[in-house]
Length: 190
Image 1 (spheres, helix red, strand yellow):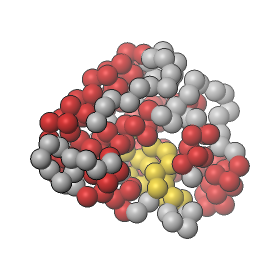
Image 2 (tube, rainbow, N blue to C red):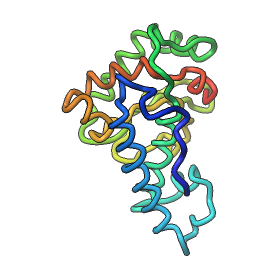
Image 3 (spheres, rainbow, N blue to C red):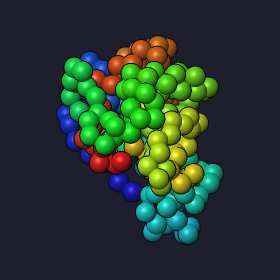
């Protein structure tokens, strides 16, 4: 495994995510998961599998590191420079409106799931094989692909994702992330 390259400069997401947070989060935390997984894989049945298959089939340390790599890859590639009034369009927007009533209602439910996840983990918007949307809380390295869902959007609620910028104000961090979502990327996953 190799560390993904960010598709933007370290300061591109500021003020929502500072360059300092992004540098630590991507360059230190994610790099550590990559290093750990690379040390664990040799000689295992997972050694030559794609990352998604490792997450679906493994457990223990291999799962934890592979899950964190997959989660962070999806997380970091869903962002763009801050935009005012940022929201989805097209079929994804229609699905959100149909299932949640409105984009604002969806956002409130998604943020609530992120705020109320005890400890560390991820909140996800995923789609099932029929296109129905699901908001799930995944503790630790969890990813909805382990339940047959397709991950579309995720917010990282591990403290290292926001502590330098928001201290213990997880709700403020989650509310700010909407300004940097690249809805074209999220829609392409749908």
